[in-house]
Length: 273
Image (cartoon, rainbow, N blue to C red; front, side):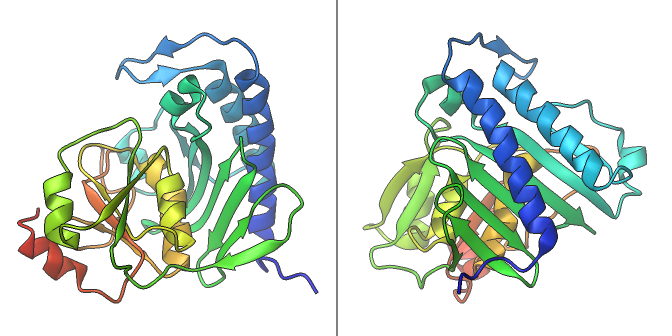
């Protein structure tokens, strides 16, 4: 008998992510223009097509629940601060990877309750991989559309450890990673929220992010990683939370697979934050 997620909303949102992925792939297979937004990040027709699909689909699931999305105008903090439950969406995470056509981009849809991601869906449109999770229901991986579901979990810290790293956002994390993991760690470069998913399915151990990310970049994959047994911590060692204030920019963070390790102590010993 096939096993699968037993949370009905997960399957509905997963299907919605696949529809958004289909819209993205229509653009991906053609020539497309690239615009630059005010923050100098790229924007394509695929971002907007996926946004339209997701906004319409979420409105059908719950017409009242608010949505925060990268490709939609944001309501002021005076309104958002009253929200206890809302959707947090990145219709195309990794647009730089999309433009490079390397396949390492995702659709991210998260449900936030009281500042925590309690449901997360991450789709890689090119490979068809779908990661879903809901609080108390575990994390699941479907390698392609209509494939069997597989329950996933993180691993004990490997020797040598594997650090997932950004494909397009380089930085000076190497010295910090050596202090956290030792000299012999291995680096696996990967785009978008797939870095979290690599840890969630036990193929990497940590992802250290120095520099800015937005809340929609991390929430869905954080839920997947946490339900797989991992954690996402700011550099003071506290769990990453959402809807914290006017800014939608995350603090720098460390995503880990082996939550049994005293990462706050390691962060302090490494001279962080």
